[in-house]
Structure formats: C-alpha cells, structure tokens
Length: 322
Image (cartoon, rainbow, N blue to C red; front, side, top):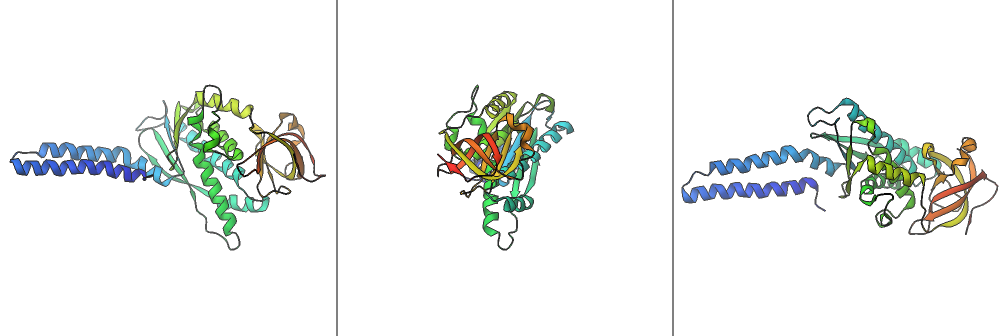
C-alpha cells in the first residue's frame, strides 16, 4: 500500500498537471487563463493545508486517533477532552505493551522499560493525535528478545484499529479471527478499544482509529457498550481443557485479566481471564508460581494463548494438556 503522503502527492500532481494544461492552453489560444490557473493553485494549497498533517501522521504512527464531539472544536478543542484522550491512549498503550510481550518475566520487565511510545504529532481539525513505538537500541545479548518485544507491541497497537469493523449490534463478528488469529492479542486489542471508546464525560462522541496498515474504524458509546459485553462475557473458540504452571502477573485486574509467564513446557505466555470468584485471594498469587486450570484457546500453531481460569492453586504439579 502506498504511503498516505505519497497518495496525497499523487492527487496534487493531477492538479499541477491541470495548471500546466491551463497555461499551455492560454499560450496556444492567446486567451488569459490565469483565473483557471489560480483556481487549481488554490485547490493544491487547500489540499496540503487540510490533509498533509494527517497523512504524515498516518505514515509515521502505529496508531492514529481522531476525536469528534462538543469538546473537539476544530480551532480550540477543550483541554479536558484533549487530556482525556491523551491520558487514555498513554495508559492503554502502556498496558497493552506489558500484556503482549512474548517473553519470560525477567526479559519482559527489561523490555517493557526500554520500549517507549512517542507522540508523533497533532493535526488540526477536531483532535487528531499520532503515536509510534520507538525502536530501542539493543543491548548486547538481548537483540532477539528486543526484536520480538518491539514487533509484538507494535502489531498489538495497530490491531486496535481493526476492532471497530467487526463490532456488531451485540457482539464481535467471528471473522475477526482471520484478522487477529492470536486469541491473546485479540483479547488485549478488544480491551484497549473499549478503554479508548468515549464516555459521556469526555466531551467526545466519536473516536476514529487508524493504523499505517490501512485498518480504520470509529468508536462511539454504542461500540463501548458492545465491547464491555464482550469483555465481561468472553467467548473462547475451539475450547480445550487443561492446566498450566507459571508465574502469574497482573494485567488488568478491573477486568480480571492476568498473564501467566515462564510457563512449564511452553515458550509463550498465556493471557488469563480470571473467574471473579477468585478476587479475594488473587493478591497472594501474583508474583508466585501457580497452577491454573480451565478452558483455553490456541493460536494457529496450536500454542495455548488465552485461558478462562476457573481454578488456581500454588504450584504443586506440572502442566497437563488435554
């Protein structure tokens, strides 16, 4: 896919060709065609004035968000709405980064500290912001883990922009599996999309999300309600039963999400959806090695990636898969 600025330049070139044609026509006929040249020049100026900033953001950002609503006046958006959007994006990209890192506990901690999100710019016209993950300078001995971490986090942020197109009236269409086959990434992206959906207090009624890959869609309070239902009532596909042993780490306790890392017999972590009946003793489990049991979903390679945990206990056994 052509870059957004390249597409903009192509559209401008058509207008430039019209300017040249008008000038040649004037020379050949002896007529004054300056008025027509001026019209085309004004269109070129307007094109770049209105669209260059947003096109540049799309090319240089993993995720771009544009907000519309009473708090997003094109010339002077409210500070409340601006801060609401910036704060929510910052927090969700941070949570997303930690939850999708395909690394062991120690490597994940180190990588999370080194992966930084950059604010790539602001475009006029409502509130439009761009964000990109900065490529860290690899440390000796950690080149491969840094590469895996950067790729996973960047792809997870871009996946958020694909969520809106699959939101139906009451659920998410099953075809989302084709776009996001990894169930752990899918659950993380749905969670992030819910948090980024506007609330009545935000002064925003619609947020458009887009990625450099071309995915885009809109999130409103309607989509927020559907996403909340999906998050609170997860539907694992191709269910299997099993137990795994690993180190349990919190991801988003408000929505009963955690990550099991350093899993016995597996190279990848498992994203866990915890039964709300476990709330009373969860705080004693985080940071410890535990055995989790329940139903889980695998990715296309057959690796367990997302699990609904209905039983949790201290580590006394090895992993079993049925």
